[in-house]
Image 1 (cartoon, rainbow, N blue to C red):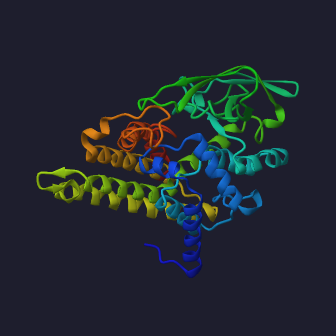
Image 2 (cartoon, rainbow, N blue to C red):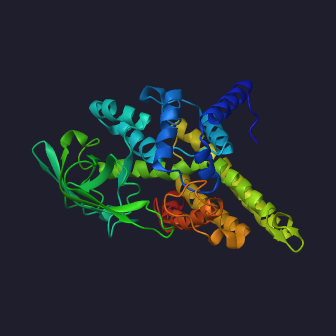
Image 3 (spheres, rainbow, N blue to C red):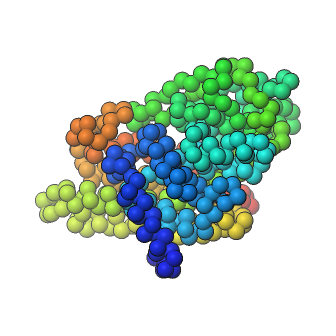
Length: 394
């Protein structure tokens, strides 16, 4: 457990007071039920944080961020989770925003970074394609330069929240020949551009999270190229490392979810008393807590190295594996604690108070959606290959 300085203790109190004043009952109810925030919830939360000056906890001050230390970032995440607050939507803030800041032109920075901070732009990620998921370098979406535009043709797959997005960061092939990784560029695409079609995909949890995105003769201004043409693979790798490293803030959230599991198990009667008092169930809870605390310690170390500009090696891949597996274990235990009550499904878009299945259906939806965590962001099999190459030289 961290020993807080007086300044850190005051900071934690400020975060708790802000959450108490700002979080709505609808948002906290969804979080406590294990359900993802709605887009409206995310936009409300981002706008509120931005107005407070906390819109980008991990960004440097010169980019419009807080400039917080790694300990402040961790404490902020911990206190928000303890108040049943949601995480911030990460596509703009943690993925493309830092890439624009590091590699984008001054025009892109001045135009797009403020809109990410305020939540005016909602971003989606145009990476995976049919036949190019974990083997992303096999992507076939092409961008041909014609005058002052790129003309893009291709298809993206599993694009989360594209139906709500105003912008997409998109890996495209601008050159052929050489290695698969060469000739890939990173473009920023306005989703209102003619030629873009979004086709929904319904997932196992009966929700609409992901989509197919078809691009037919989509004209993207050349100034929306990030960095140099043909260098997109390098930028994309940095972005993927950040995506995996996002899990450094998930330890406090997993611990909070563990408290929800305990609360559910305390209400379930067995022939010998509450399920929470059963020795075998207690042992499973204790083991899960130990593993979450270990992940949390690794996250703190990684966050400190990131802020010091150090290479944490394959630890982002290690953490992605452990977080995804622990989340799946957590949701399995949650559903098990609820028993048959967890089988009642919430309707798509259902919110608290609409009927009495909300609190029991949420964990089942979380369990079903959690199946994908060992696949997205690079499957855990791919992550183990990365660890083998970068840590073991295999």
